[in-house]
Length: 446
Image (tube, rainbow, N blue to C red; front, side):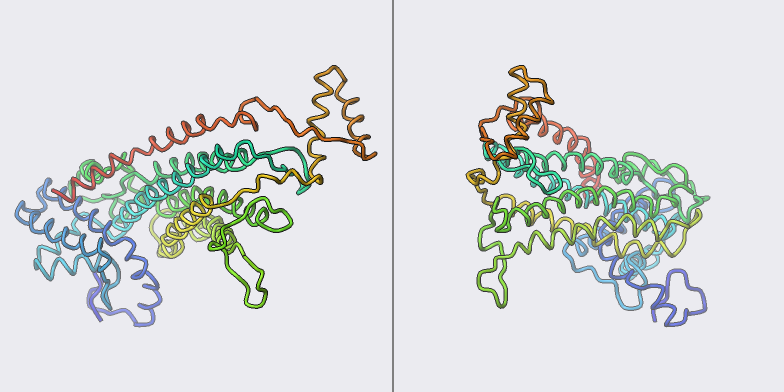
């Protein structure tokens, strides 16, 4: 068995070792290239404060760049007997550079190392997610404008209520995503603060320059208090998970609507045949499995903040091994949500809209409010107009006038598409990904 970074003369019992490592080696593959980035910033700072020689820094940076490329290409492996990504990177350096490789850990603990890895990973995944949300947002807005004159029933209590439109339906989900992005931006800003230098949670007697590593890694600021930096473990993941749950909630609701509206009983939309699946015994079946799986996956993601809360809810300040388990549910969730965003975008782009829903007279009663409003505008008191139309419906004499004129902001005739697009643009600009990307690029090219 390989020596652990923390082992002295006594090896841990094998079963204890397997239990405590758990799925950490598997999960740490998500973090490999970010662990390298954090180490590059850290050793650059160590050289500036005299804890590394310039020639040692040059050798270490060159080899770390090689390891980064290995991780970027998906070929990074945590070897059998090696506990985690931090140990593997240090092992690879010492194999190539000897004792110089052992110097990269000065002024660090694995506690602040994994903290910075998680933050670098998370902010990169958020950037991917923002672009995917934008893609879906623009498809929804395009469809909203394309079908803005096509009316459909609006429902309350799953009962026919009032006229709606596909412009409103598509546009509602676009605006929902804008709000989701606002929450994601807040989570991103909490994530984009530097914990490096907090060591095991109580700082270091080395003269570390934490502002330097903050700048090198493109963080907005550092987590200043070293105890709080460690307290941020779990809190950051929970905060980001809440933002992800918001996006997942929007997708889940859209998926439910799509399943409902695609059914023969509604017939409001139709998926192209190639986007549906069949039955093993019913030749006629064309099932909306993509939406059903999206609904299930997104409902699972909506439970993520709760899971994280329950893992770290009753922990005092300081580091505890409980926090390791959060990685198992948090790290893979980004890929799951990103897959859902891609598929829903594809579905929404190709969806076919029934432009003749209201030819069916069963939807005529939803125009009753329009008739009440017309009577009110002609001078009839509202309560009298309401009763008059209600009695006509009960008597079977109500005739729907399907010509409607809604003009106020956000209504059928005034979707405010451009205003919603401007809101989304402003939110996306507020992430300021350019600063982060430039810092990482400069570090890799140093």
